[in-house]
Image 1 (spheres, helix red, strand yellow):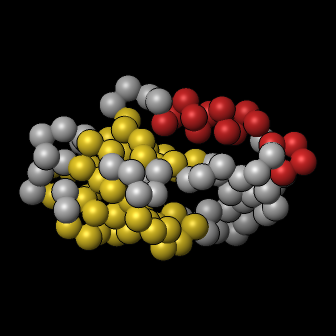
Image 2 (cartoon, one colour; image 1 turned 180 degrees about the vertical axis):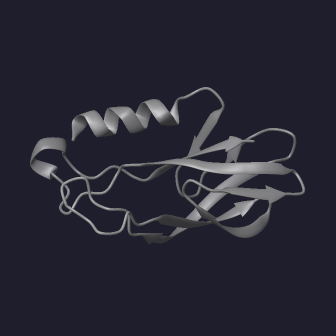
Image 3 (cartoon, one colour; image 1 turned 60 degrees about the horizontal axis):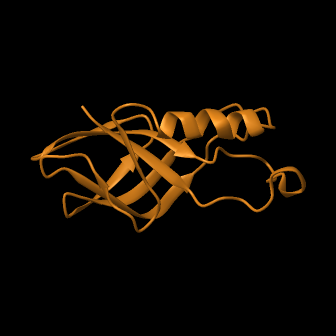
Length: 114
């Protein structure tokens, strides 16, 4: 479990990835910004479960000031450029292992300009 959090943190710090929590703004340059403000769906398969469907994560965000819905793993074309929603942390678990990891951290989302 800790390895998964470390992997996601590394993905959030990868070159070209800009991260933000709910209410923060990721500035991707040249007028392209993403400000997540709500999680619409997080049906990703928990790490400690077997699933028939991989699931997905969708968020609502202001993308360069325009309300949009973004889906993890997909790109969105805007007048200011193309943004990819590339990573979300933490991953999902059937039950958060608070005895091992403490309280569940706030969601962080990673975006990249394409």
